[in-house]
Amino acid sequence: MSASRESDRLAIVVDDVWETFRIYHERPGGLKERLAKLRRAHFTEFHALKGVSLKVAHGESVGLIGHNGSGKSTLLKVIAKILPADRGTVVTHGRLSTLLELGAGFHQDLSGRENIYLNGAILGLSRAQVDDQFDSIVDFAGVRDFIDTPVRNYSSGMYVRLGFAVAVHVEPDILVVDEVLSVGDSAFQEKSLARMRSFNQRGKTVVMVSHDLNAVSALCARTIVLDHGEIVFDGATEEALEVYRALMSGGPRPEAAGEEAGRTGSGQVRVREARLEAEGLAFGSSLPTGGKVRLVVDVEAVADVTVDGGLSVGINVRRPEVAPAVYETRTSWRGQYVAPPPPGAALTVTFDLDVALLAGHYEVDLLISNAESNAIHDRWLGAVSFDVDAPDFEYGVAPLAARVSIHNPDGVWPADSVPPPLSDGGPARHP
Image 1 (cartoon, rainbow, N blue to C red):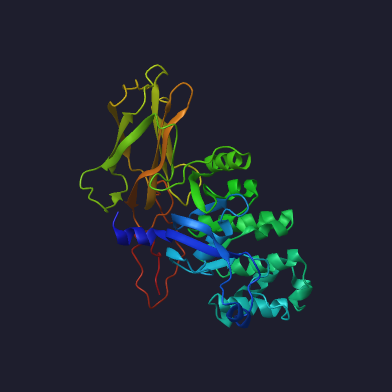
Image 2 (cartoon, helix red, strand yellow):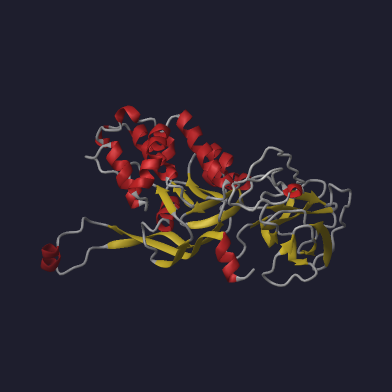
């Protein structure tokens, strides 16, 4: 995919970001005291983030989980440009709204009403735009009876409800949310999750830090696990939760994700190469709706698994902003079992696919597993990707080929218009 096309579909790009804090071993004195003692304060450096890289597409909902001090909140602050990265770069595309700390951006002496307008202005809205959203914000937060009360008198739940309501009603392209939703009651948490799901369905991006694994599982198809400032897993939420639970129970830590990000398994059998082949398909070009494409998967045996039974090769086609899989199949499901090659040897599996899809960006995950035990040898998320072009008047995943007819015998077009013919939906009469 070309660089310009990739930038169009990416909401967030974090590249090799480091964030370092100083931990002082004594209380730093004033300038006069330091000059008098002619010595520097002693400190050690704490690396909160260590070379973190990730990409988030428009329409994705991504969870960030990890133990306390793993770097989750620091990463969110760097993405939101609240903290500058000491090394590396962060690029975001679109309006970004944040809810990172309880009451962040609120002035204690101003009322709820005044803080709504203040926060709206900070987020780039005009007064007229805030006027249009004001009642919806107040009703969502449930603070109408206290809207003219200084927010210093608000409870923690009222604080977070109002802050979240403002953040989501500015219609951001990217919403970045920290653990603050845990302060609200269960009804508000469910309402907030429903609002973030609606963002996802409308192609918006959500990045959320939470220790509530149920909330992460309900909202996020993709989850990133951090440990001591490094990404140790980036992939499907179900697997991410397993990695997180293993870490919290003292289990072994996975290798930090670098070039192999999104790839897990025993490694005994690996995908050596995967490629798409289609007539006229050049690098960076799109496939037409209704076309055909061939996915070629080259598989190599690293270890001897010839005594463990047959292999299964599977594919999962998905669109990042759509929760369920678009299409999934495995050779074992189809009764096509694959004899494992000896160590060092390879085999090729070919999938011929009809592109019965509408416009969008699609990614293909690959799976190599034992056909009997389902033990995973290699799961590669986003091994290949492709774009589909479709007519502008259709949206979704599957082209259902709607055939539209109109019966409107009493329709009247304005006198100054030129109506289409009756066969195309024009009126029977025209002034």
